Image (cartoon, rainbow, N blue to C red; front, side, top):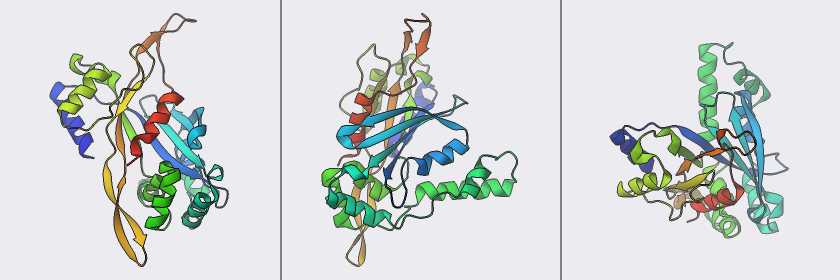
Length: 279
């Protein structure tokens, strides 16, 4: 992503540090075949991640789970699923038709191997890395029809996004707290500097000064997604990923009176960030 390259140049210029606060993935929950958050989470759980909290977004028919690793230097995960059964029948039929040929999900054998990376050979680790990369980068079903994508987008832009992008990363996040330089020590300064670098940014910052989580992001990158149109494969300009900025200010815990940092997510803010992939 060009936006990320510009951000990297910006933090190098100021001598700042980068830490990835969290990575977000999107899925669609379906009964047949059985699909949803677990299609992705079981891979990360085999690698030591554990579920921390659940979030509901009823106006968008979405549910999310936030995962963390015991090594707190690892990024948090925010994995979401679209509850397809809550959509209109035409939208459900589109999803079922496209996802019915879903590739085989990670086998139990491969999950066990991921959970024992230290004990397996270098060759086996390389095989698993290739398998994981393919799982996230390759569309796990056949190319959707252009009309299917456009029709589903009228009811759920999230669902249309997944049809086009599969399990590829939706966004990852720079933690403002990690910068450790005065020029980039709050989200206002970071957003202003990113705009100065020519990066198109979200108009608003989610979360007022003094709140425990403040967020903004770049606009989504638009790519030429491959879709079917009749017997042809054509390019359809569609949103891909965006780059989020998060600040987690320290606050005084009223019970312990210790200074702490909020490591979770706020549903009211997250629901607005889902809209960053709208065209």
